[in-house]
Image (cartoon, rainbow, N blue to C red; front, side, top):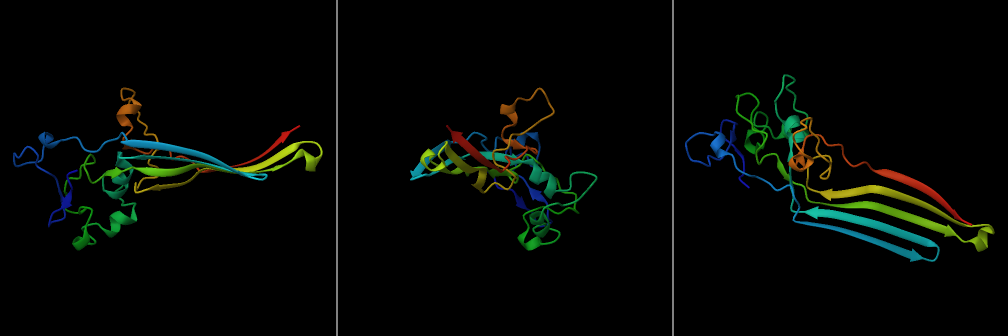
Length: 204
């Protein structure tokens, strides 16, 4: 990927790919890859006496996402010109020019949303389900086998992605764009919730 840097006067620096001396449409290029190079899933169940424990791990590697939510929260792009992320404030050129990762908000520099600054590694490993159960046998209860269980979905996710969820589905109000087209763009897709489930099962 082409790395974006900050100039001495606090502006974003973009690559002049067509070498015509200016940044224009001819400098556009393909960046990132929304499709993972490798995906996996692992499901396992362990039984010990009357206990049972099952888990389901899933993950994907080698995919990128364009984090437009982070872009909107870290730049001044609307009439409501507020910086909403701690990172963008602490490493903004106006506040911290020596360690700046974000361009100045005061010099009128251009900040393109579709740049390598906002394309992030979205590889992840997730514990999608963890379930623990205990069965009281009919020989003890005298009327049925009773299994009590507790399970959690989306217990944790390991990822370097800075958005809310590396797997959240993108949405668009443009009916001409399919899910495949927008799958690598994070514009506020609802994250996968963490849920807890308690259960009781009777086998007469």
